[in-house]
Length: 298
Image 1: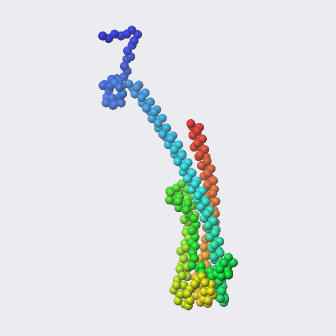
Image 2 (image 1 turned 90 degrees about the vertical axis):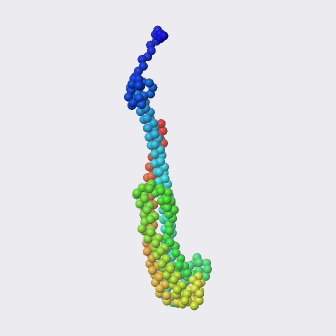
Image 3 (image 1 turned 45 degrees about the vertical axis):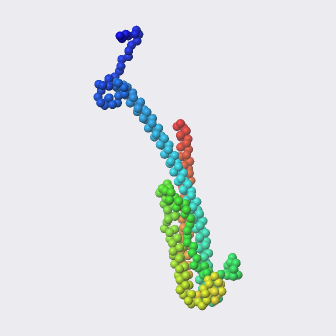
């Protein structure tokens, strides 16, 4: 027996029973009845939740990307500073090599100039810094020595290996490539190594294939008396004198290349220095925005 209590109204159930719906509406209906009002309320809530999650992820990704860009800028600055410092070391090395090349060239030019002088000590020169043999020595004793031009390039090779060369940009990349792998440097390295080695090999071949048979006593390039005793024979060796002449010509060519490369380094160091200052000012602005703008947003 059902009795209605006085003052109590049974609420009317809203919506359509699930059994009367088509398959699509039944699939999206929660409960026993379907209501369009309830459906759109749930749809709006789902859209709002989705947008909150979506924009939250988007903002997080943007902040993370800014952080990565900031790190890339930092690595770029470090690379530029290290390259600039290494170029300074390269210039110091080049300037020292210029002095050394000039000193060696002057010594052998003196020797070439007095080659035909009728003097037993014609192949000996005096140097107050030499402690043995009363300061006398023969430059031809050290004629086989080589000193290939090889400036420091550790930073450049490291940047190429770790893949951060792309951060430098096209303009800086061109400057760096011309400095480290340019044609001028390659010719300079070839002339001080492969080309000069030709004259050294000819000198050694001359000793081992001719002098060793013509000279009566054993060849001893480090003995001053040996140069005095055999000076007339050596003076008649036109092949050796011509070899020295050509090597002097090569040293003059190297001297010009060294001066040009030194000026080239000086210009590129100044360019990199100005670019470092620009990049440092840019990274300061990015750093301020990354942190201060984030604080204002929060």
